[in-house]
Length: 154
Image (tube, rainbow, N blue to C red):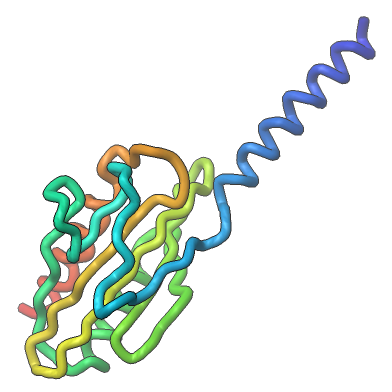
């Protein structure tokens, strides 16, 4: 009987391990396509400044500065947030990953600021890699980033 219990327990532990390993899946294909951030999938776990869907739309952030200033401001704000990791930095594009504390679920956040004027519009896409709903986590994170960037302007 003890052997059956050990096999059963081992099976459960392995199943949980496999399930949790899947939480940190590889980054999907992201970036700029036709001058816009990749559209959100048809799920409520993503927000995008280019979205035509009212539920997924999030207002872009507007701040003043050169591309270099805007890039540095975004990097400073992202790096102050818990469980963040910047994965791509380019002249007018930044990508970061945010991991949940308990299960390590990963959200991808992208910033695109193409304007060549002193007033920069920062378009944002933030999406969960897995699951259907994110309980509004991505929208709330973007709003926190917005407040942090706007506070730097004052």
